Image (cartoon, rainbow, N blue to C red):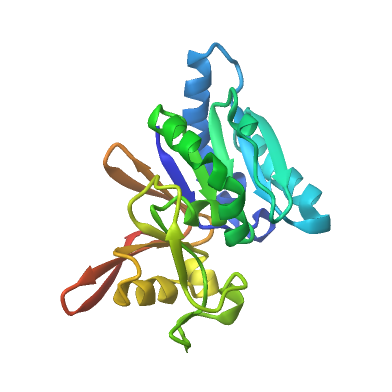
Length: 245
């Protein structure tokens, strides 16, 4: 089973095959395989969402519909307000876990009490998918926001997640590279580059919207309509390239 890191992107903004849910296809196939071992005809997929205010029901329905358009499954959408945390019961009897997108610091706070349980489940073969914020917090050293380093801008202010200084904290620890998202669309590749050059992280990947990086069994696989930008610390600076396009 694998870890699926999705760079974000609203379905209504997609074009062509991206709108068909390509970024979820492998994740749901893995969840279905796990469900079959338990004797279930449909995979039970927990979808954890945080915040959203009055639009929360709309976002919940959008995730549910996107998964169902991609493959037969049983989405179980659970929601908490910003500042609240999920109870461990949300992880009971599931075949896949999807953590959605929104305010990344709030997602980290909401999921933090479940870190140990999620790590154990993933180690036991539970497929994990992160969408935007859910991807960012999956790292062992997670970038959760900020748009400046030492007061110097490194990315657009509107991408800062209500944080000024670039902030790196302990994440879920499912992958050993830092993750940023909405790379080409929001200009966040420069944040990952700056974080790497400053030594805040040891490098990582920045994922475009409608694009998924699949991490499993020692290999990396890219699916979707965009690119995954790899940032590596080198002796004389930072090296940037793409894993797929």
